Amino acid sequence: MKQSLGAKPLALPSPVWVIGTYSSDGQPNIMVVSWGGICCTAPPCVAISLRKTRLTYTNIIESNAFTLNVPSHQYLVETDYLGMVSGIDADKFSVTGLTAVRSEMVNAPYVKEFPLVMECRVLQSIDIGSHTQFIGQIVDVKSDDAVLGDNGLPVAEKVNPIISSACDRAYYALGECLQQAYSPGMSLLN
Amino acid sequence: MKQSLGAKPLALPSPVWVIGTYSSDGQPNIMVVSWGGICCTAPPCVAISLRKTRLTYTNIIESNAFTLNVPSHQYLVETDYLGMVSGIDADKFSVTGLTAVRSEMVNAPYVKEFPLVMECRVLQSIDIGSHTQFIGQIVDVKSDDAVLGDNGLPVAEKVNPIISSACDRAYYALGECLQQAYSPGMSLLN
Image (spheres, rainbow over the protein chains, first blue to last red):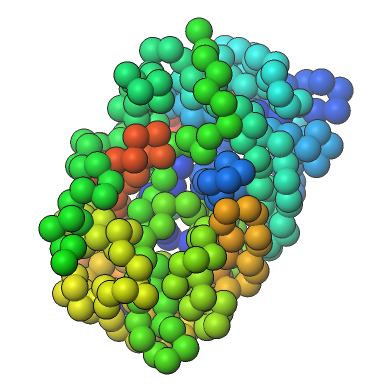
């Protein structure tokens, strides 16, 4: 039996991504977002949504660039803090001890300590309501050697991303690998 | 040490969502998407990205509506199958044994067996490249009683969503709850 819960953004799961930007005076800043997802394969793009009051919003409008950083859950304390404080009020790199590294291809800093980062150039911004969505073209991915598999791509269990739930505002670990895609469904073909 | 992997859509994690639509002759169809995410709080909206060759793309253009269904990982076989076959070639409800239920608020069917579904009205469509992104306003959420917590909202562990990894094209379970949001970061405040 299904109950109607009204109009709420309760889709599961959500990512926990850290967005790196420079302000116009060159100050690096990082914030955390859970409203986002990959949105295109070619060109490879990711969408993130922000409120206009965020420093990151202003920085992206001015720089047309951001980095998407995937924190390992070992950095849960630092990552959670990034969602509690504005870069207007604190130097979040300094407080967390995380290290800003200048990107090679876009005008935005990435986080050295996080295993998987993407340099993104803004293609479009779309005002939706409370949030503005930025579509960023991923122009390069940088990954720690330690999380790469034999095929040269990052291994999800080694990246150890944080997952969030819009239903209970909690953080989760990645669970066990269930199956490769395009494998369990074979039993229903024909 | 970070290695450059080039321009690839490797952000982690991704959702595994099943999208329900009607064709213009009233046939229900379901497909699976991993390119998507919540994109606005007010109004509550979700974004999903599709290739134009998909039947679901045509159906959404014609109906201006879709449902977002969160499958439990008990339905991994059925969900995986939904990504292997086009609704042009198969009646996927019939093959999987899943049940189409007409939504109350939009012109799209949801999946009875999945614990958490959202009825969505399309606000915008954005051509990005290989994929077109549809921004759907969530006009109602419907949840099985069995997955609701004491606060009347779905409990992530009970929904038991499937998580996917763009890096290794595999399905994962939700792991352990790490912390509530806005809690671990308190130690870095002040």
